[in-house]
Length: 357
Ligand code: M6R
Image 1 (cartoon, protein in one colour):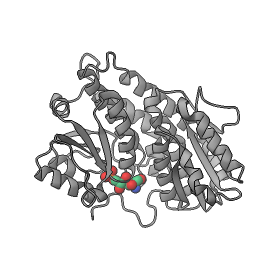
Image 2 (cartoon, helix red, strand yellow):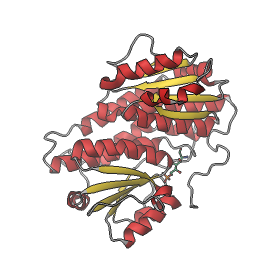
Image 3 (cartoon, protein in one colour):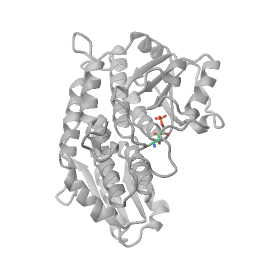
Image 4 (cartoon, helix red, strand yellow):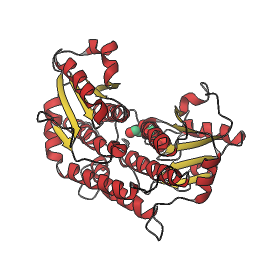
């Protein structure tokens, strides 16, 4: 039920701190340590490469997941769009382990890949919000998102829940491999939940920025580097699907290799800045667009912020920065859609789950 909320999308954005806290409870053992089914850990420890397969927002969560898995477990990881996998099949390693990310667990493109990997006898893990869904039933293992029903077509809380589950999964595997001595995810996902809470509590300021930056624009850009680039792709998908503004997510450094030609007077360019090592470069790229007339907006993380930044999010573990920095972009998309009079929860031409290939 929507309760007092005008739209499910806003309700689901607001629920994210609670979703993360619930996840931490669900994945905790009696000794208050994060844990997952040992059979999953054993299976992944036997494998030599992880293949993440997903579509849309789940694919974008997979891009973040790759960073988490590689950094914490040192297992090489590839991320693939499910609709391409069948035709553009990568050369598989000797012992692949497949992870299917799907909020609904019903996405036909992803299922088609699972049918193939099952036929080849490879182990698979589905990370989904829906127990008993097709992908969950047909894969070897399942981890649940425990996010509660996601009704809005635009996925929000499933994205953050997927990243949190992947972080928990990576830490548990990293500990068992002896790569991590002291787990921090229990604490740091909790800190991220608090950060999200403070961002949603201040949503009026983001609503104002949505009016100021996005009310009349026909196109827009999100830019970032590293983890922030992955979030830029998700931010762009969210904005375009609910506002119908043509939006591109771009690697900040790649913009000048062609796409900067699209920048005109007042084109909104939004930079995501949470990574210390590349913050200066991203700011430089934002400046380049400003010099060509762009209406620039910077969303940065405390510690890296500058006085001119329009949105500053609280500091979180940089491995989990996506959990926090995505929230203002979800809110910008929501308010932009609302102000344009669109059907926020049911954007045109879209269905909640895509069950045809
Ligand atoms: O249920 P799934 O996670 O498999 O769905 C994948 C995509 O169809 C989905 O994320 C879609 O891109 C959303 N509309 C994004 O907001």
